[in-house]
Length: 410
Image 1 (cartoon, rainbow, N blue to C red):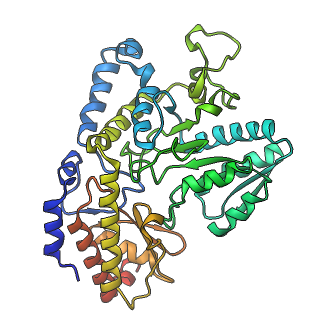
Image 2 (image 1 turned 135 degrees about the vertical axis):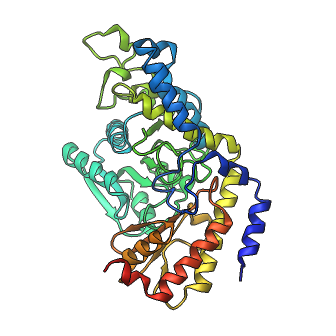
Image 3 (image 1 turned 60 degrees about the vertical axis):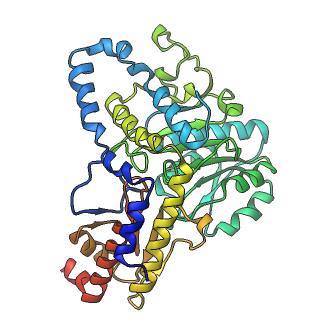
């Protein structure tokens, strides 16, 4: 069994250990919820203050040009593109994930109607993140389509092979289970039958290596506040493969998606490429904070190194839970197979999952609960240490053995 001293030794040898200093982490707290809200980069408060006091306070409206506010969606987008295998000028930061799902799914359905008239089927997973399903259901009703939800990954293949699916919409890493799809294989199988694929990268971008071009994706969206460390409510991003970017106009044709927004013409002319997926005025303060978060990942240099540490952290957590928490009703939900696992580990408990998590939080271990029975733990390689994993499982075992979970909810 791994000892705490061994975990500390691994931290001393960790090539990424110095990156923890880029974050402002509360002392004494074990933060395993970066897959829900990333930690605060130390650079962010000063940068946001500079934008507020200097660029806004002193520069006022001149800062749209002088401070480059007008270029933020593309500038930050190009930085995120480096993390997801997209090209320069192909990805923009805009709006929320929900809004970007609406824009890209609407566009995908329009292209599907052009290329495969008569197709009216959108396919997703029943345990996909709810906002994606709500948007898809709304669009399906509006467009006269059908939203079909599958209960198991294994059902996707036969559905795609039938050649009736217009759009396959999936989250790359499932928010409840941590299971990761084989993006390249699903894209290949979908494209063989003329199906377009929309990927939600909310639990992937900044956590696992991605290569949207290599894997031949069609559309992708993602949020900025999880592994990208952009802060609560940070702007999201949208990517469209260049082969699709100019084929149709997305439905929210706001002025920043215009080819010449400052000509103020009364008629809409879409911007070339992915620029047309912009909509309203960019959220300058949010984008400034997001850029700081993205820069922490770019400073690490190599997503493969992050992935290697992520897998080591999640593997250690799984092994320690197996060894120390057996017999207390916990079940592993996340795949043990490494290539199927994102950067989180989910456990279930049939009766006390919420109470267990509350007891852990009271003991300084922050994870989160997902109804009805999931304890979810995120592992952010830039600031999570091996000793954090060891201590978290130690406190989990104490909660389970002492009956503290019952006290947490009484």
